Length: 179
Image 1 (tube, rainbow, N blue to C red):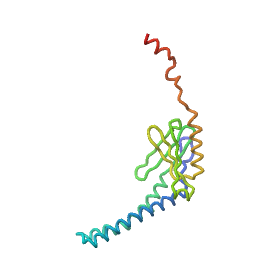
Image 2 (image 1 turned 180 degrees about the horizontal axis):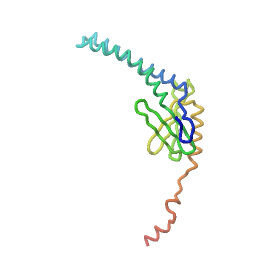
Image 3 (image 1 turned 90 degrees about the vertical axis):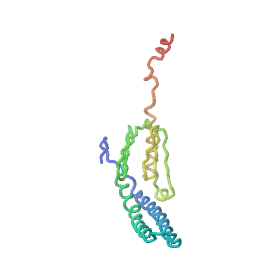
Image 4 (image 1 turned 135 degrees about the vertical axis):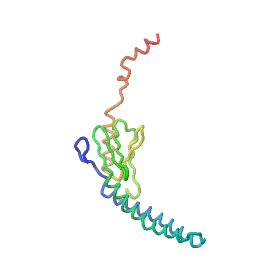
């Protein structure tokens, strides 16, 4: 996809796909342990419909890793794109429903760079831009790129400052109306 300025959209770092898959493995293992515990409890406490619960649990034990380790990371990597220029940041993400966000730089109030223990191992970071209307996040980009974007937004966001004189060109008009 090409940005309005003619630039190609940036993607999350290639190692971001590895991080998403490792997180998927961790989530899958937790859910698999829960389903195994449910099957053991059904057996020992002689729950009715043990066979139905067992079949459903086995199917979920097979499907959960496929979804969390392969499908979701692949689609998140494929659909996440971002771009920035002197006017704003454009972010596109989603799995089923693709959302697009455009954040003007002068609206950014706060910038946070987040690193988890797994992202730190791969030198990745998330950068979160906070505005009065909400937050947007650029996920799993290289740490140096996140720091460059942080500096860029701080420098260019300060250029367009609020000018109170535009709103109230002649402040004496209010005083004359009161007299």
